[in-house]
Amino acid sequence: MAEQPVQGTFIWHEINTPDAEGARKFYTELVGWESNTMEMGPGQTYTMFQNGGSDVGGIVAMEGEQWKGVPPHWMIYIAVDDVDAACEKAKQLGGAVRVEPMDIPVGRLAVLTDPAGASFSVLKLKG
Image (cartoon, rainbow, N blue to C red; front, side, top):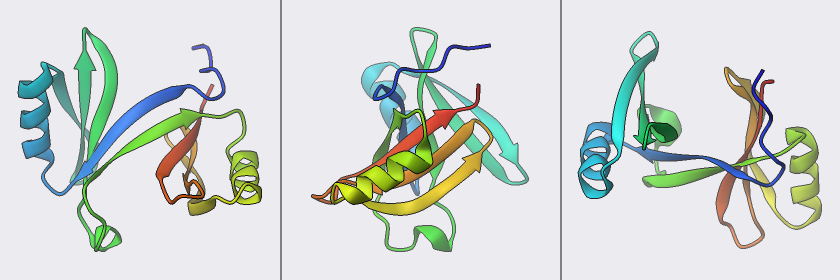
């Protein structure tokens, strides 16, 4: 079993873009990352970036109505011990929950904003 990341550690970086192939080409050529695209389900793919043989991030293709009006952006993921508790604490500190906690194949996540409106995700990996 893999060890859980330490609370507060930046653990993943993901670009959300309507042009996944363009982003893949740009970043692989700009900084020398390698990439690997995999099937994630019917009609869905996910591109992983690797640097020096280690996975460092990925690409989400912004397809569908849920992305209407959302500009392309990088999303960072911060490890937490408890996603639901992190959401409650963020609200107490003046932040907001933009995407409610949900289970995903690799763990549990939520999307938050800080009091100034900067977006980030919190993630508890399965383990």
